Length: 352
Image: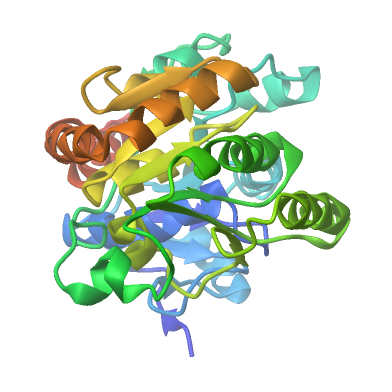
């Protein structure tokens, strides 16, 4: 059973109006426990969230006319259009005493409808300077962080290549929903071209294949089979726990053509793994080229392939950049910093 929360104790509500796992959902799952460790009294509502998070029931929304314990106004922290719209219903139609906050990760021009919703918010947060550049309203930039207790360097044999049962000495991986947008085909294409030259490396692909992308995944499997590399390029699909797989990697690749923010490079870097990524989403701000990884223009296969090849040819370089990546994430992208920055925004909203 989900952990229940009371409306009286809740000061911030984090809605999740999408059943399938997404980057937004992953952010909520990681962030809410840290926020509550910092005393922010955040509860979630909606499907698709794990039971360990404090949940409000839909009927509990009827209690939002009452002020929370200690007074002030609650905050409805939306991250999607439908969540903003629902917040407007609560605040402007039902006249509940709440403040509306929206976090925008999108790095594209918003539709007229989205701009209208955003303009109705009491405060807006952008997850990067780049996403903020598409906003037409005042906002603050609060970068996502990673939970350094959950994502950490290898600790034992099961966290190494030897613990996987796969062939080779070094592991390279790509994670995320398997689809064209995520650039999974670019990664597989690079592996088919490069792995015959680097026999010590094995590649894995992890992530969900939804029904409408099964033909895409099947085409990748066919390409791998045609190249005779079924043993060295494994499409594992959705795994129960991605964290140990990050720790087993020597190199992580994030080849997205389009991204909102994108947490996977940070999760890999926190696991002591170097990263080659496209410049989609906020990736370019996460990686220090030549020190913690490399960046390639989104959709540019040749540049991506050549950046990967540099590490396949020199595993010691990948390991050194993995160490640097870990230090950089700890300095710049600790989840505690994200939670504290949001807490300060909440306090301002509650006062004003």
